[in-house]
Image (cartoon, rainbow, N blue to C red; front, top):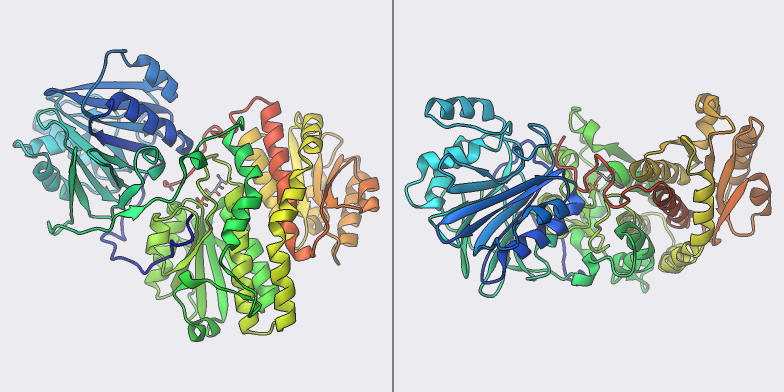
Length: 629
Ligand code: AGP
């Protein structure tokens, strides 16, 4: 259970100017178990982040053995000799940034002596200058990567103490890094450092772990320490110590992970994405749990770190997010405006981070991010904080950078989301916005009875979503019928417009079919030119004041020969008649259709991708947590 985990006030962050990190994965292990198996298992757990090559360095006696391959972890496993074992080691999944996808460019990288190995997430911006300097000193580089300067640089300072050498080398590095280093002459020792790229220490009993992501080690320990930028960890089989840039020892809190191992397993499902879609009734329930105040007909959100006076002074809300999280933000803003009468606006993080945005004194900002590590969102948030605004987080990953650096917030408690395409995190982010909107509305204009009615309906969302999931087989048949189309349009109005955007994003991400999300009302202003018998249009039809208008938009498309898939309300016979295929969702208060209408779109994308033989959980070119620009 996550419920006890609250957003806490910011610990000081050493380097808020760090630029980017990368989406690669790191695992390190020191202990009595079979190191090869632990490293491979850790890398397998990190696969979801997206990668194109992988490797491990194993220490045994006083030597290191390196194995690296292009492609999946299975290829790495096959390349490792059966008798290769070690007492400690590091592993890495690489998502190429500097240099092509080749075995030589894969990590770990070594110094010239072959005794020092480093894995690195991030980008070393001054690698050209460092390489030139190191080459002058006689270092020979074998890869095209920025990372290779790190082992050569550390080796320059190595005099028998890896920690000291790393400490001396770090100030010379410009850019971002999460690194793990080992040296053949220091059995069991791993030195890690963080600057802009996540690193977590796993504390076991008689064994220690270091990883970029807790999923890599959750099978072995539930005790973790999140490193902050500027911190260095020195660990051995049964000890660790953490220091900061000022060389002072830092006493850090050990956090308890509350995940069950089962939550990162597929169970009986063929893919994580299907599992995560079907988990939504429970994940939404978790997002709501303990946050509904029936007595006062409002919501309780203790993690906001804002008292009633501060909340009443809020005059407008701004949201920063990317991709699916931005779609949740768009809906959240419509709800806040309608329910709490607060001017609200959702901004794309990649846009706002480079704009000189106006930060009004009465504005309250949210950064919405499943991973809590998305670079665009994080850097946009820091810029807005620099301008003096309070920025809250709506995050799923507990202890993530956005969660820690925001001034408070709401954990959505979806549980680990492993599939690259976000599904359950989205509906939980919606739940967070619905709670916050209720809270703000009740502090402003909303009557107690209206609050109570809204709260009752919010409580019913998990059952509505469970009912929407029952259309699985129908949606699979619809996907079979249309999955060979080259283009799709997704159309909705009002709160269903962002759902149309989300449906299009899901389909293109995992099936690679071109899809566009449009406001149904905007069709006639351009996109209608795309309509033909080969372009299916997926319409979202509510049963509110926008229904008639949406039905007219459907007829405009029908008249031009476009096939129609309608997601509408159970019992809407007119919508069923006008559509070629009709997918019903249960009737509810129209404000709650975003929860139910997104479900058929998630399933449609999923079944199209499955039908086309795509890698659903790890679609091409995508990474789960986009920590590069
Ligand atoms: C969702 O399916 C995508 N993989 C992507 O758009 C994602 O939502 C976006 O990168 C933002 O990620 P975040 O929520 O972790 O910040």
